[in-house]
Length: 305
Ligand SMILES: Cc1cc2nc3c(=O)[nH]c(=O)nc-3n(C[C@H](O)[C@H](O)[C@H](O)COP(=O)(O)O)c2cc1C
Image (tube, rainbow, N blue to C red):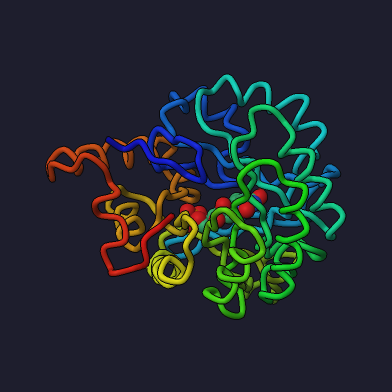
């Protein structure tokens, strides 16, 4: 009932673990059967290992959280050797999320990941607000983004999904530019650039001053962006931002998302994604739907390819 296709890849259901909130699946696989998920996006990977940012990395806000992890990861070669073989035993689609400090790092990273057996989709992260060089710098201006998408497209032998920043100058123009540069899908949104101040210490909470905001507080804005983008492009759109219940997921699907990703809600309750899958199944049964495609894009958006 919930089976869906994303860029030619069959997913058991449209519920995917969002990058950076599920590691490589190993820890959560001790808590529940992660093989029930539609897919897992890996922690953001870079060609070279990164230690991440100094100082505090997470901060709770009303109805959300801020993070400044800074793409801590073991580097792509180590991922391919140690983590990917283990991930392949989990029985779910593997989406490799890739970041980079400069264009060359993106190109080489995408080349290595897309050539690896077991990677189903490459998710290009041009939207990380927590690294100084690269990251979101590529995801603000449409022309800059199109340059990096076009360059990695040439070396990417797997479906290419581009993860968009809500901090882009114009999210719709950005999505169209990525589609024209060769993206097979877009996922949105990454975190919103935000600020928290420790009034007692009289300084910013984070060493980097700003950090990325996620969780239920961003959901209505993310939903609006997904709806706008889904009307503007002909490639699949994956909805992300504050999804915590099956009703939230259904809203994104109705706004035009082919699939959804769940991040912060998994920190609150590790089995959230299973509850979302169960809820969507019940909804389809109660509404006598054979597929969620029936309710996808009900706001009069353009048909998906
Ligand atoms: C702690 C943390 C780490 C994250 N790391 C990454 C990352 O490495 N790459 C990436 O593309 N997005 C990363 N994200 C963004 C999430 O994948 C997601 O886009 C964002 O949190 C919004 O979804 P949510 O409200 O469901 O959490 C991270 C988010 C959090 C909270």
